Image (cartoon, rainbow, N blue to C red; front, top):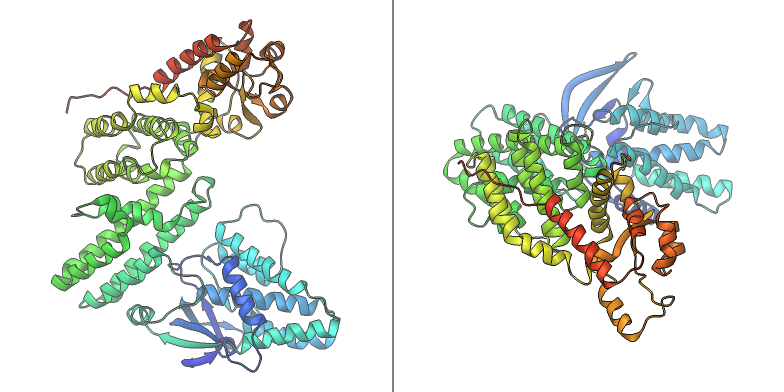
Length: 594
C-alpha cells in the first residue's frame, strides 16, 4: 500500500479491505464530532487541500477473495472513528443521489459503492463484535427496520446516519443544483489528505501511535493509558515484545467491551470510563501519601510512577504493567456486575436503593474492593451500611459531596489488599465514617429542622416517605404492592398538610407566625398524587380531611383521625416519623470480636 501523504480516495481505491481490531474501542463519535466534520467539508473551498489526520494500519498478511479478485486486509490501529464516519456520510450521499432517479448516475454510484462500501460480498470496512452486523445491515444495506436492542455504539452509528441524512436533505435546491452539491461534497471527501502509516507488527504500531496526533474526539485517559503502557512495554521488553503487547491489547479489548455493557445499562449511562479507572487507581496504587488528593491527578501520578520504575528496573516495569492491566480489567468486570445486578436477586433491591439515592459515586471504590470478596457472604450487611451512610450523611445531613472521601478511599485500599477483616471493615465504616458525619444526635437534629421541605430534595423526601408508607401498611396489616421506582416518579408530589399558602386559612397574626415556622417541618409533609395536590393543596385541613380517607396511601389516610391540624399535631406526627426513621436507618451493631 502507498505510504505517506495520500487521500481518502487513495486509501480506499483498489483491492483493499479494512477491519477494526477487537481490542479497539467501539464507535464513540457524537454530534460535536459529526458537526465538526460536516462544517469542515461544507465550507471547504474545492481548490484548497484539507488535512484529515493520520491513519495507522497494520497489514494482516491475509487475503480474502471474491471470484478471482484477492483483497489485501488491514487492521485500523488509529483512525477508525474518522473512517467509520466518512463511510456513513458517503453512504448517505449515495442514498440521496439514488433518490433522484437519474439512470445516468447508476454506473457512478455503483463505482462509489465498490470503492468505499462493498465489492460483491466483501465489505470494505468490518467493525468489531455485534457492531459489524448492525453496520452492514443498517448503514451499508439500508435495512432500517426496527431493531429491538441497540448498544450505545450502535445507537451512535444510527444517529450518525440520521445526522448526515438531515444535513443532506435540508437543501432548498432544484434537482440539478442538488445533484451538483452532492457530487461536489463527494469530491471533497475523495480529496481529503491523510498521512498513511502501514506497519507489520504491534511494536511498530505502538511506536508510531505515540508520535502522531489524531483528529476528532480527544482520547480518554483510559485510551491514553493503553497507549502509554504499550509504549513503556515496547521500550522495556528485551524480547517477545509482541506477546506482551497482545496481552495488553486483549485486556483493554475486554475493558472496552465491559464499559459498553456498563454504559448501556440505565444505572451506568452517566458513568465515564475515566471515573472507573480513577476508582481503580484509588484502591490499587500503593505508596500514596494522600490518596484523596492523588485521585484527582491520578493520570499524572500514574505515568510518573511507571516512568520512574522503568528508569530503575525494566523487568519490574513489565511485571507492574501486566499486574495493573489484569487488576484494572477485574475492576471493570466488578463494576459491570454491580451496575447490572438485577434488583430481583437476593440483595438486589438493597443495592438498587443505593443507586436511587444517587450518592453511590463516593462508595464505588469501596464497592469495587468489597464486591469480589463478599458478594457470596456478608453482602447484605455491607450494602445496608452503605445505604444507611448515604441516606444519613448526604441525603438528610446534607454534608458536602466530598465529606468522608479521604477515609473511604483509604479504607477501600486496605480492603483491596486484605488488610481488614470483615468486623474491622464494619468498625472502620461505622465508627470513623457514619458516627463522625451523622451520628444519632445529628441525624435527629437534621430531621427536626424547620425548613425540612426546602433543605431536603424532593427525591430524598419521597425516599423517606416510601419506607414510612411501607411501615404504616405493615402495621395496619395491609399488603399493598408498592414499587419504589413508581413511588419516586413525578406523578407523586410532596404535600403540605397545613397548606403552604394561608390565603384560605384566615389565620390570626400569631397563627401566621406559627404557620410560617411549622409549615415546612417533616411532620407537616406527606405524599399525594399530582392531580390531588393540584386540586386541594391550598385548602384548609378540615376540607382535605374528608378526602384523605379515600387516598391510596396510608400516609394520607392516617391523617383522617385528627379532628384539626396545628402545631401540636405537627410535632406529634414528626416525632412518630423520626422514631421510625431512627430505627429503620439505625447505626448497625459492630461485632468487636476481631
